[in-house]
Image 1 (cartoon, helix red, strand yellow):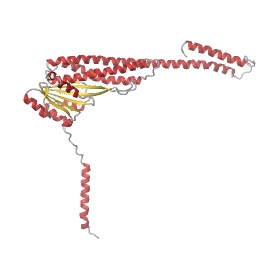
Image 2 (image 1 turned 180 degrees about the vertical axis):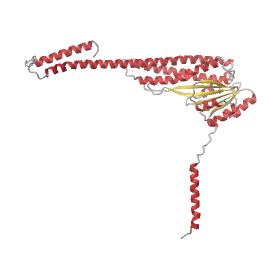
Image 3 (image 1 turned 180 degrees about the horizontal axis):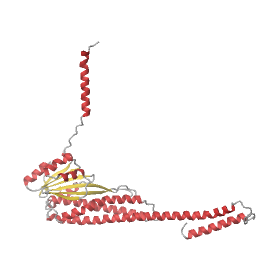
Image 4 (image 1 turned 30 degrees about the horizontal axis):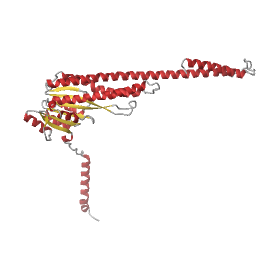
Length: 368
């Protein structure tokens, strides 16, 4: 039989392994650091309206611009977290409160000024296609675009699947004269793109509302007010995107900041005019849907009243034979025409005559 000293070397490694496994299980998992480049959609340097060749990091791009003393940087990010955007915020001097809003999203459209930087939030919208507007649960999908505007940079942060600015960047790069106006021209192009999407969505929603209106006022309509409430809720989402943006857009058109030069303000005035038209259209949608809800409820009440009149009319028709049969069903010997041979046919004739007269009156009055 082996001694205890001979067993000890085989036992210790097993206990050490158990303790090491316990420590490994208790320690938090190692979090992999995601590089900023994974969130950067594009980073470009523009000088005199033309894009400089090459690939740039956010710090290399701004260093190139400031060394030249001309041009600006446009860097686009898609849904970064705090850790990834902190490097950009430190390099470009972005205010921490604005950075927090840009990371967490779900903000109202607004325009804020932090020292020598403007921070603007715009709500984006996209029309969700569907076969039948009366049965759809979602009509408008929303997202967000935040823009940091500085003297020599624009940083855009996007949230949502439909908020891409690739087409906006391409159009600006095809128009060097517009792009040479500086970072404010980029902010105008983004705002113009967002407002144009509002106009497009409003046109598609208007078609849906026309279809719903036709369904509501069709003779045999079975439209449920719940379906209109769904559309009304979607219009409310669109209203939350459009209405709060009116004030910030007007500020940019009226010279809110020196970062927006006079040459660009006229472009913002044009966007402000379009936005005002969209705001009026959205308000009209809301009022029209409220009217349609009232119309559907009135039709339901009228239908219920018609049903009640029909039920009342049939109850009146049934009450005639019920009353006569109830009277002659009483156990009395001496009753009129009880022992007459034609008493039964006479009762049936009276019942049929009275029911026929009632039916004719109900039909004439529109109860049946």
